[in-house]
Image 1: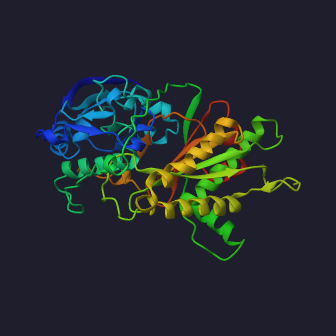
Image 2: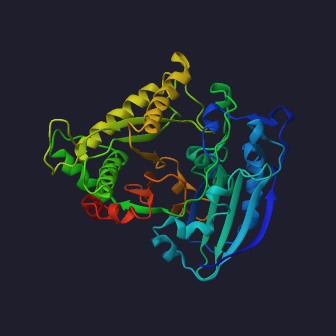
Image 3: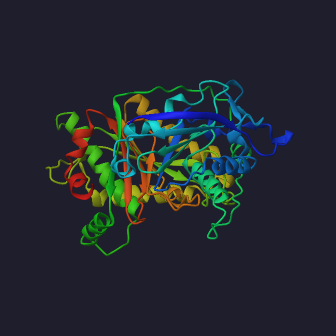
Length: 436
């Protein structure tokens, strides 16, 4: 696949950022995020020539998202919001068809559609915080819009808010949405930073990132399987998929260690704080507003094996309950930061668990992030919604990002594993049974 960049420029806000907003201090959570880029890739079957329209609408909404036109001054822990501009690239791909792109399951094969790679973020005080690449598919007339943002200032929910605002602004004929989405940036005042020293990351070519799709029939089959074990309940798609994935990842670790004693594991589920705090955060709060639901597992064995007195039998049904209960407790805790002290509620359990990881009491970790409600498949710039959505490569093995399917009734699970571990994962019976 050959992608040629034909132009590169900076798009500045159509109006200047007021002097009182020129310095944005990072929040406590912002400071603890790795300096990486988060990227989303949107695929559209359109032949429209819309470069100027996209540029104009971007300039139009940047005054609201003024942080994205600024630059991160790492040593000062601030964003300099002096309207330096967002990066805007135009590219062409001659030898690829949209239908072929939609079949790709390996994220690294989509990497050239991204304007920046994840590990290129925040290396210099002149690096743009927002980069956009518009790639025209010359052979079929399709269009790929890729958006990459610095994770230090935006999480995936914030990225979804920006893309929705930009698409609404571009689509003048869109009567189904209000054109204006007004973001807020109150997290530094609610959760002040502590000037934590920055941590660097690097590209590890041994990590692969692959999509596994659960369609509506797979979800229905999983629900039916669990309903036979007790009173029927409608378990969420995300909860079901997390259980299947966790069980398979436990199996990978056991296989790597020759099927011996199970090692202890910490399962971390990212929880979006928006809509869950009292008082509530604003609807389109931007920044890093995530806490983690942490669940330790010890002496894990799959249901088919013989147990001794210390073993814990863990199958899909048990994981649905254990991970679901842990998640519900964390969601309940999200209401408490302002009344009980946000540092204790948000960071106390995290500090305790990660101390156990460092000490070796817990051997390894698995992380789940749910992006299924961030609206990426709703981004209509005026020529319809995406035919597909991809994700850029990100660090940290043993982690899973969950996306909505195009139809809205399934889940696409993007799994990051060591290259040698991926074949073990793919041989799990439930992965083979429920995913495509």
